[in-house]
Length: 329
Image 1 (spheres, rainbow, N blue to C red):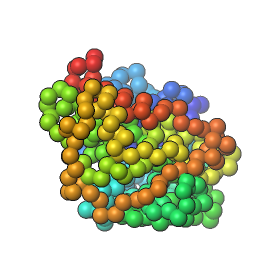
Image 2 (image 1 turned 90 degrees about the horizontal axis):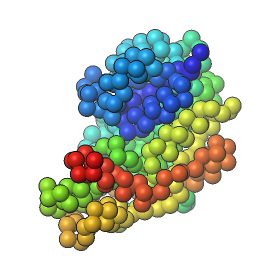
Image 3 (image 1 turned 135 degrees about the horizontal axis):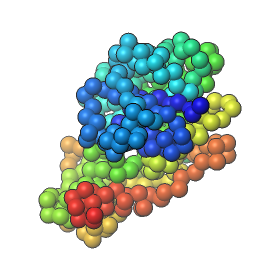
Image 4 (image 1 turned 180 degrees about the vertical axis):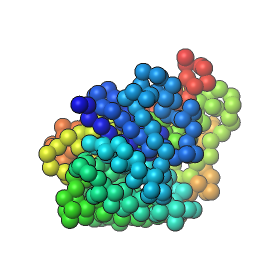
C-alpha cells in the first residue's frame, strides 16, 4: 500500500512543491484547503486540472485551522502516515498589523492540530514548519538547533510557541514530531507580497515598460536565502528517520536585499540605479539581524544540503516573470 500524506497549506509555495515531490515518490497526497482558496488560479492548478492526478493520487479537502471540527474530520477520514503542517500567516511584516490573527492561526492552530494528532487511531509522523524569525536578534551566529529563541516580531513569537509545543508533545506524549527551522526560501511561486518576488516582478515589468520604478525599504537587510525546492526535500527526509529530531534548513550564506536587486535587474539587462528608490513606508518596526543557519545536523543525519545557488534562484525568479508575460516562452 502506498504511503499517505496530508498537507496543511498545500496551496502555498512550499505545499505545492512538496505535493509534487511526494507524488513523484508514489504517495497518495491529501491537502487541506480553505474555502476562500481559488484552485483554478493556485499553485496547484496544473495538478487540479489533470484527471490522471486529481481524484486519483491527489485529494483536496475543505477545512481551516480555526475550525477544529472540519480539521478533525479530515484527519479522521484520511488517517495519514505523514502530516506536513505548513499552514499559517507567514508574512513577517504583516504580523505587526494583525498580531492577534497571526497568533491565533500560527500558534493556537498548531496546538489544536497536536491535540487532534494525539487522538488519531494510529501514529502519525508530523512535520512542523518553523522559521528563522524565531531567533530574531540572536547572540550567536550562525544559529543551530540549540540556539535560544529571541523573536522580534509577532510572527516569530507565534512560531516559537508552536515550535515549543511540538517539542513538548514529542517528549511528553511520545509523538513522532519534527520541527524544521526553515530559513528564508524562495522560488518563482513565492507570494507577491514578499520582497524577493516584489523585486523580481518589478525588474521584469520595468524591462517590459509596464512599470517605471521600484520602491523599497532597507536594502542593506541581510538574510540566509535558499530555494524552496531544496527545503521541501529536507522536510520529507526529516520524517524518514528512526528518531524524530529538530533540524535547521539553511544555505549558511548571508545575502542582502541589495544583492537581490542587483542580480534581478542585471538578469534583464537593466541598471538598478536608474529605477530603484528607498521609501521609509516599507521599513519594519523591528528588523532581525545576523540570521544565518548552521545546517550541520541536517547534512550529517539526513544527507541534506542545498543544490540551487542564490544567483541561479533570483535569475530564475526574474525570468519566470517574463515568461508569464509571454516574452520568454
